[in-house]
Length: 75
Image (cartoon, rainbow, N blue to C red; front, side, top):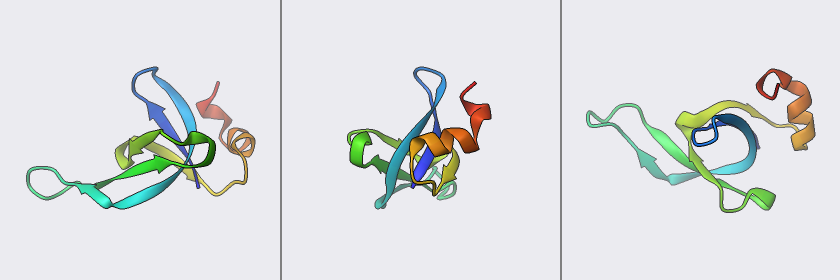
């Protein structure tokens, strides 16, 4: 699945193909606000982010299709 995330360092939106690692979950101090870690797959190997950074998710087949579906994030 492709995810559009907000890259905090460069302050831009990036498309990443990733899968969720459900074994690594975090909570805040009161046990609320659960979020998961996502790891990049295929050409995005080595890239990781957590579920708080996700803007949109898409089941499109390629990154170009994702850009065509959501062009407002890449202007």
